[in-house]
Length: 30
Image 1 (cartoon, rainbow, N blue to C red):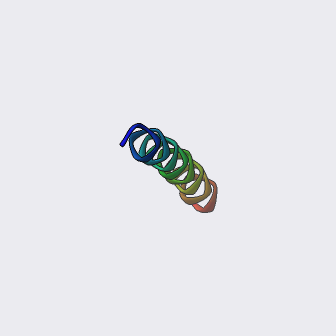
Image 2: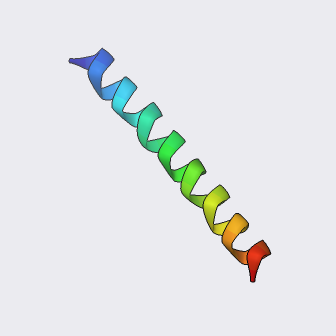
């Protein structure tokens, strides 16, 4: 169970990083 929790946390962190990068891309376009 611990492994799953740790893995889920890493995935969520990656997703947040992706979202931030996409927001920067959108701002550049404008």
